[in-house]
Image: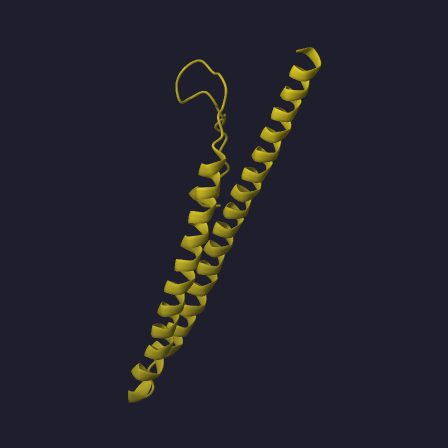
Length: 128
């Protein structure tokens, strides 16, 4: 195994109150979750558009280069384009997954907040 394949044995931890102060409540802004998810949708769209432009240019270059005949460059360009497409698809899928999770979290936080508000109102009605 290479250096990057070696497992890390360093302890890891998450500290929710690391932004300062001694703990307290976490405030989730559902508008910000939705905005971030929507921004990722836009990035994915731009990624797809730019990728298609690059694909068209790369695929068109092969035959033009090979007009002289016997060059291996067109095959290399095809291999490069195929690998590039795999990587772009992977990135696109990752962005899509993150966007979906942000949207889902926004819905879940909104539903939970509405539920808590309803519970609070019921307690106020019951106990004045």
